[in-house]
Length: 240
Ligand SMILES: [Zn+2]
Image (cartoon, rainbow, N blue to C red; front, side):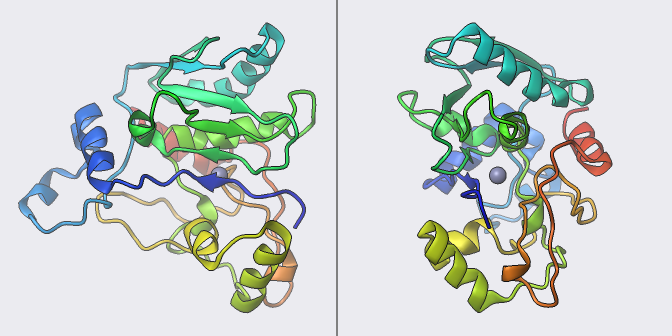
């Protein structure tokens, strides 16, 4: 494991997350599920309303950096019914902090969870200097989260043969991660009711690089720096 992995900015308020999602787009909750009053508030998608323009703020970055972010993020655009408006300053639906040191790990709110983050804070951290080779990939990956995608290695059907004791130990040693952080960002997530899943895709841009040190039998996966066919299929479905 080399680079500090990306983490999802989890909403600490599941009710606010649920309300932000259905106010933005009612079908973030499947129509029949409202009949189940005890449904879990966490079991919804967080997609933006199709047709919308997302305002993307880059604080005081220079034009060249804004262009680099734009180029990378725009790789999603041919497949979604959304527009991006990149601006400098602090006001935006998505607010991007670039950590030039590249030592803190990427971070993003998932989709409409960005709406419940205080306007004083970024909703996304791109953890690389703009001139480094990984920068474009990191922007593409973090924008996947900003559009509502989870980590693909956490797909409920992900067939990664984790060596759990080693996975916990290595993340602790190398990144100072608690078991809880590993559970939240690395290991498979439970299946969510109001979400349709494609099949697990180890070539997804939303998949971590997985080291064979963390698996049984030498299983490993490199970083995927481009959108996979299934990434495209999934995001098309999310934004018709
Ligand atoms: Zn990520």
